[in-house]
Amino acid sequence: MTSAHSKLYSDDVSLVVVVVDTNPFFWAGAALPFADFLSHLIHFVNSLLLLSNLNHVVIIAAGVSSCAYVFDSGNAGASGAADVAETLGKASRKMEEFIKQDARETASNGTVADGGAASLFSGALSLALCYIQRIFRSGTRHPQPRVSIRFFRDTWF
Image (cartoon, rainbow, N blue to C red; front, top):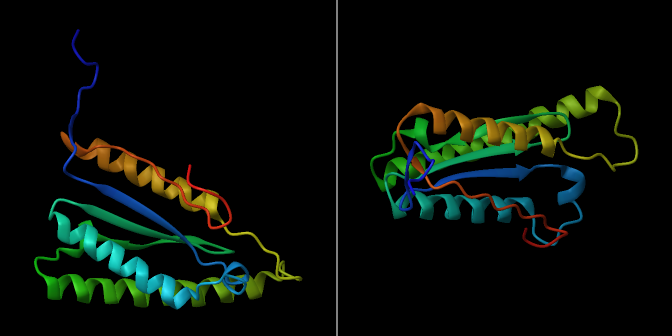
């Protein structure tokens, strides 16, 4: 019996979409400071990109008032370790800009009174799923689709 899949999947190629919760109310009570987490995330992304030049990584930031693409390795055009480091440095600066912009939007909304605001995680997850769908429709060879979600207060799903 033949497979119903019309696309060719490659198990050696990874498409990883990372959604980062930048909610300051969450990170204020977290055991790991956000700066340390961001450093670990950059090392994780760098290791994925160094495993294969075909790997693709996207980072989406979810804040209290907005969500946005912060890093896309497909747009990076990195061909060497120095380019990867420079690109990830730009991503780090873009993350800082996103956090400042989200803080300004949150302060101007006036809806956060007691510091218990939730992030727009569902919006960021929608961005991630739309991005994955766009990659799948773009050509004939795709990474094997996998989804892994990690919540700091819960367990792996």
